[in-house]
Length: 134
Image: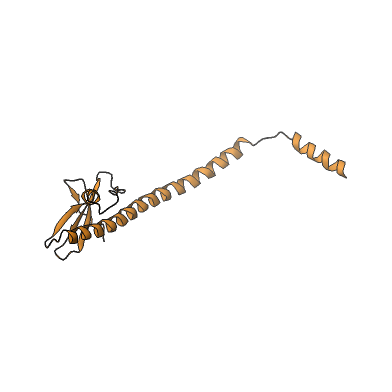
């Protein structure tokens, strides 16, 4: 009995046949279809994650701007750059803009009551009017 099993395993090992070209092409076609479905979904997920990261950064910047406004005892509307809030110690570091590569900073506007009314993307001179707090 044991000898028959050993002989069967030896025959299996001697079988040197490989895959046919048609089988390999079928596997490649299936992989291509899976890649065609997965890649767009993955890039959409990355863009959504970047937008969500910017919204989270905007909320942190809004609280830091409100704190600076209170500490400075302001009574009128004031606008702060996130980089200025970071250098003043209200933020640990300047958050990086994730979703829009043409901007490198955020601008927060605090109204006369001390509430941050909007946070937008900024490059120091121009702002993107998309309010990240919405």
